[in-house]
Image 1 (cartoon, rainbow, N blue to C red):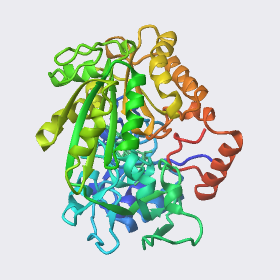
Image 2 (image 1 turned 45 degrees about the vertical axis):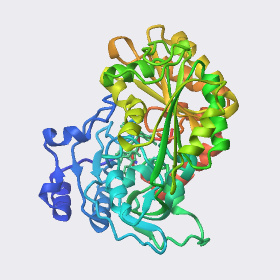
Image 3 (image 1 turned 60 degrees about the horizontal axis):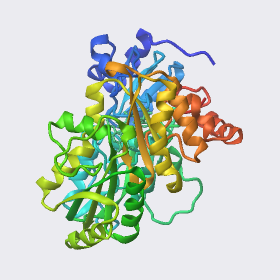
Length: 474
Ligand SMILES: Cc1cc2nc3c(=O)[nH]c(=O)nc-3n(C[C@H](O)[C@H](O)[C@H](O)COP(=O)(O)OP(=O)(O)OC[C@H]3O[C@@H](n4cnc5c(N)ncnc54)[C@H](O)[C@@H]3O)c2cc1C
């Protein structure tokens, strides 16, 4: 079906729904909605619409559907796979104004939040009830509930609470034709048919516009202990990670930064890590070369009572693997250790425009992958620099690749790395989604039959193909 155009009549209709202040068509006003966080994906849009609630979202979608205008839903625009920006002149539906937080349901340990609520605001909203959101990630000040469900965001606590899909106990969404589907009772047991929340989680804006989400919350674990551990090899770090998962019941996060990425983030922060890899011990600057093998783990335990003895005992048992360790208990000291992990993405972005390959490996192939991937990258593009970090507790490695002087590397890098992942039995997208960036590689993980089923679901819910047409589905 051919798509329609944005004309004065449509703009007038939309202005009648959301008000003139929330229909933007001046290129200066729309520019920020048209480029993604990485600066790798940029387009242009004739129109940004900012509805204020579900009813306005439904009326807007009904008008856009009648005019056959394709639309990209956008939350905090922190997505890393080019899925949140208009690449072929689509309208943008910014969901940030749906930022209402309903009272916490303390009896059920649940809360209903607008799609535009940021993760940081959600965390602050539920904290007074002694409860926490199960997903946490470094983009918390901007990433929104709608975007986090739409990408099935992961982050640093997946090993304890699961990814975003596991938090969703209710959903409200607007379908492509403006129909509202709402199922927000949040009953823990509710086998009354298809799980629309589960289906929309990870749908990347292709099946519906999420307007409200009801989340399962978790008891806050206020007492924390954090260890930064250095290893000579990736294999040692992987073995230690497995041992910590087995022995620390209060394990809350288990993150990795590999040599190369550690050198970059240390320079970005202007601080040398307190523990050194490669047997050089404290004070030694990390190497720029990912292939030299050093690795760091950040292990955090969190509980109702002080977990430092449990974590300390587990670290002592790793004496054969760990070359250097630092443990922190108070918030400021813990934050200084976390800075080496939480600032890696920003440090890379400050250095240039990377290709971001976010992958999961089976535990048994993880060390082999970390050791092997620098050669795979350099075989595809000899000038490219691989930078590795990630959520090691989940087998999730972020392979970021920069070209010379911060330029983008060759596209050949992406296909070479993702083919290598698939050969080792891994997933080409651990938590960021497929977006535009990995669209052409989805066949590496999904069979023709699965892709046909995806297409059938898409056509059933969005027959005209108006919802985020550039992402996920080949
Ligand atoms: C510094 C940094 C660290 C990060 N760390 C992590 C991490 O640890 N783990 C992780 O998983 N991700 C991480 N990300 C990626 C990003 O934060 C997540 O993908 C997040 O879930 C995106 O939320 P958003 O609101 O910014 O969505 P956007 O970027 O605006 O959109 C992402 C996708 O969701 C769709 N979408 C947005 N809102 C809606 C809606 N209301 N209804 C339907 N579809 C919608 C968009 O169309 C797009 O396809 C990080 C990003 C940055 C910049």
